[in-house]
Length: 113
Image 1 (cartoon, rainbow, N blue to C red):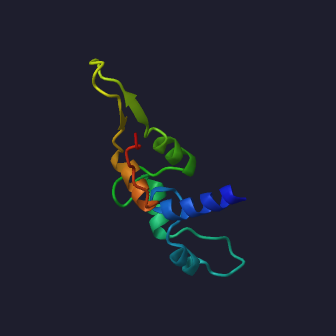
Image 2: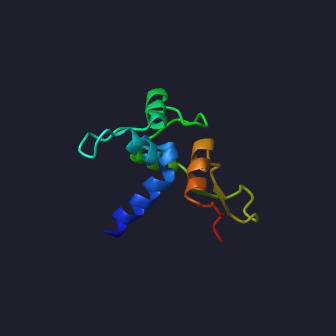
Image 3: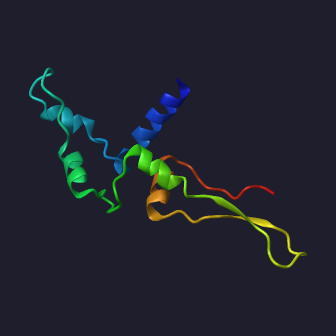
C-alpha cells in the first residue's frame, strides 16, 4: 500500500509532464451530469493532441517518465594517475528530467565519499 500512496503523490505532482489531466475543475465543469462520462479539460486535450507540454517538453506516461529519470546515474571515475583519488560524477539532467525533479522537489546532490 505505501507504494501506491507514493505513486499517487508522484502522479499528482508530475501531472504537467504526464498525459494526466491536471485541471480537474475545468473538466468537471464540462460534464453535463454526474452520471455522464467524465470529460477531459481543454488543456489536457491540447496536451494529448500536440504531445507537448506548455513548456514545449515531450509528454510522457508515468512509466516512460520513470524510465527517462532512471538514466540519471552516478559514475565512479578513477583517473589514470594512480595518486589521484577516485570520484563520483552524476550525469547532468536533461531539461525534462530537471523539470520532473523540480516538480517532485528533489535535488541531486553528489554522494558523500
